[in-house]
Each structure stands twice: as structure tokens, then as C-alpha cells.
Image (cartoon, rainbow, N blue to C red; front, side, top):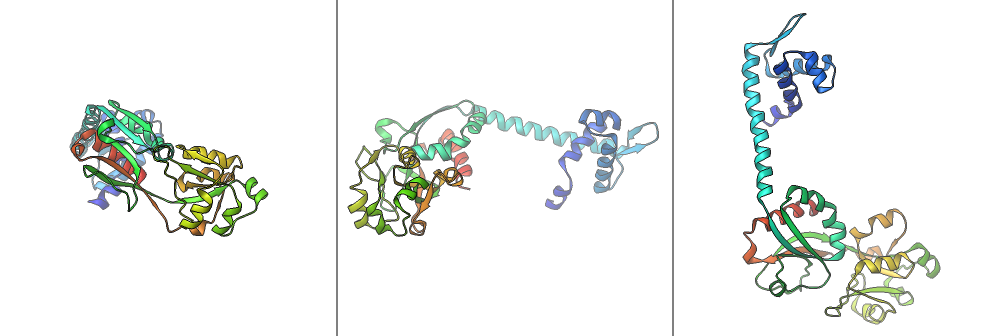
Length: 307
């Protein structure tokens, strides 16, 4: 069946249907904006595949054979089923409505959610989405959230009522601008960071700092925690500071690909970051596990992002 389907091109069947309705290759060619010769070749290839003539040809006209009329009827029925299936799926998507309140970290929304959001909205036009773009941990119950995207580590403690679904495995890197490195020197080992400006990200919610994966705890405590500049609540702000020659910053690798291509940032100490990964997950209350609107959102973005 699979081999037959590969050789039976849908486009050839569509062309045959138009030709059968008109019983005129010139009219068919004009309708499809191709040449009459192309129509004739396509019909001939189709006849060779199925093993019988669809049209009887003379110098003046083409007519459907008896087999051609039967084949036309069957193909028309199949194409009607395909069209109806498309309408049915579209109607099902249109029937999914309501509102989802979603919390997503700033960087993940910008680089992983945003690129697919317009298409999702077109597929589900009646589903309203409220995105709260924030790096803080939310209270699902008190703030009435339906869904959250969060970093979940091995030691992360989650409320018992939450369901976790892995979405994306990210890596981080240390980056600086070429101008900064030209002025302050390239770094070949973590110990040398003591002589550099390190831009650190922290959360004002709990004053928790974003641990640099390349560093051991002693270097982190002595240097990064005592750095001159601390950026609270916006990882994007740390990136822009680094772009403006402000120092060295840790960022998710997926968020700096364009800057690396344009040579606006340079990765340093890459060999120290390879082992550590960060897991982004969907989190949602178990009471919502049968929610259709939640399911379609999770399935859509899981398929887009995790591949």
C-alpha cells in the first residue's frame, strides 16, 4: 500500500478529475495554467500506473472510457471525503474556545514560543491566550494559572498536584563581546574570571542567582556573587549589557545563535559547559489533565519545540 501511494501522485488524480469533467485537454490545460502536452503526459502516466485507458482519443476529441467513468466516480468520492475530513478537523479546532492563563519565562517565550504563536492562533481562532512573561515562580492556586513553563532541575521540589511534561533540554554558555575580550583579554580557564566583569542574573522574588554551570561553588561564591553589576528579573537585559561590552554573561545557547553568527558575541570556556543541561517543562494542575484546550496547546508546542 505504501509503495502504491508513493507512485500514485495526488496531483495526477486532481488533474484527471478536471480533465474528466471537461473531456477536453486544452480546456484542462488552460484551467490549470499548464500546456495541453503536459496534461496528455500526466494522463498517460496515470493510465500506465493503473493499467487501463481512461480516455479514448481521436484527432477531434477525447472521451472517457467506461473504465474512466467508473474511475472518475470513485476518485470524486475519495476527494470529497478528503475535503470533508479537512472541514471536519477545521470545525473541531474552531469549536475549541475559552481562555488559557500561561506563565512563561522571558527568554523561552521570545525564542521558543513566539515563533509558532501566530500559526497556532490561526489554527485555534477561538482560543484566547493570556501570557504572563515572567521569570518568577507562580502560585497556581492563588493566581489561577492553567499552565506554566519552568526550569525543572533534579532538586526542584514541585507541589504534589502538579503534572510535569518535559518540553525542551537546553544548554548554556558564557559569552562576551569581541570588544570586551579585546580590551580585557581572552579567558582560557574559569580561574581567570576573577579578573573580569561578570554579569549575573538574579530573581527579585527570592534573591536567587542563576548558577553558572561552568564554575564550581567556590569560584561562583568568590567572584560571581560579588560582581559589581547584578541584573534582576530580566535575562534579556544581561544579554544586552554583554552586547554593549559590559562583561561576561551566562545565557541559554538557543538565545544567542544570531549574535554568534553576526560575531557580536563570542563563546568562552565552552568545554566547561558541555555536561550541564537545563530542563524546561510544562507544569499544570492534575485537575486540568482532561482539558481539551490545554491538551491542544501542550501537544502543539511540544511537537514544535521538542523536535
